[in-house]
Length: 281
Image (cartoon, rainbow, N blue to C red; front, side, top):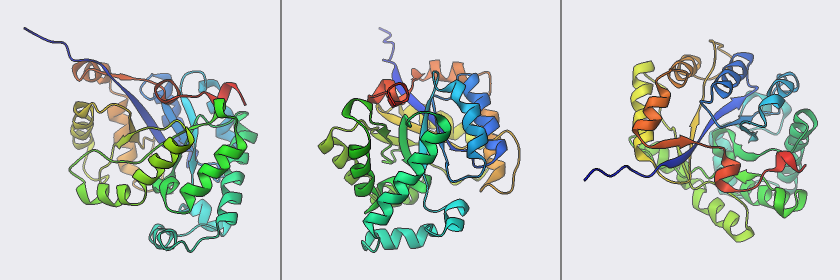
């Protein structure tokens, strides 16, 4: 007897919105095609005010969230940012002033709300900083104080479930995935369970297509599949060629067939995990 597999709901989130115009345009194109269900914005970018207006019309179709940033060139230029390795060490040692961390989180949320016109649907982090020690505790405190219980953004827990990048996955997980999930559960905050989309950004579009097929086959409930598309090359962004290749694969007309083949449906995180602050802010 043939058994049709149960459909697994999956959030596909395009990171780094507003980092460059090419990235932002690519994300908007994929959202309009129904290929993604969320995007995360870098509000420290000088491009954010312009592209925030562009994304407003999509907020009824996809989740638009804050890509909390401590490690980009934008953060470094503002003086509080740190290179990733230094931030990891300082956060693990607790060598960060939580008051200052809270103030910066508030500032990035202010920038989001002032230009997007709403609270973020979700919060994740550039290079997964949202779950680093000190940052995660400060983030939880800010969310509990800033938003009412019925309107809190869902949190992306970067608990990686996808081989073959075992070492990279262990590092990401070890920086606080379980701890962030525990804090979210303790305080009743909506959150994802797992993260996929991890690879080393090498290879061509065919290789990314193979990765995508693997991630879809996993079909793990409560997963966010992150991606980094762009509609053109811009060397100001890390791994620019990989971004163009991701755009090509995610924009392929065959994506609907692949989703059906693997019994996957793309949904918004606020549908899968909980609240909808963009309509209550």
